[in-house]
Image 1 (spheres, rainbow, N blue to C red):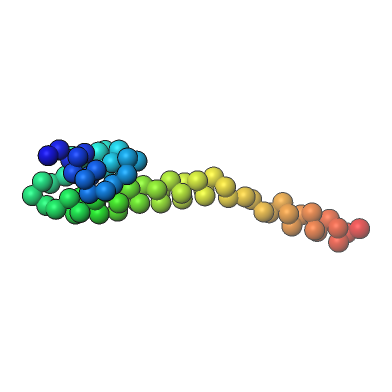
Image 2: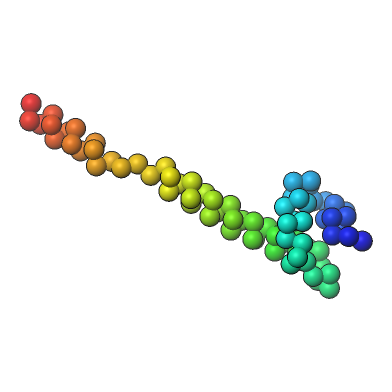
Length: 76
């Protein structure tokens, strides 16, 4: 039985199956399919976390200009 069919039979959804097939080179038939699924989940979580950090880095706002506005109000 091929990897895709094993994942489907295990109950994995179509989206996860597509993700898991990207990791097919790491599949070891001598191990249980659950072992491979856990591996894919862990590795994909690392990728998602890295993407989230990258996204957050882009959203960092420089707040130094805000203090200048308050300083100018004190001078009034």
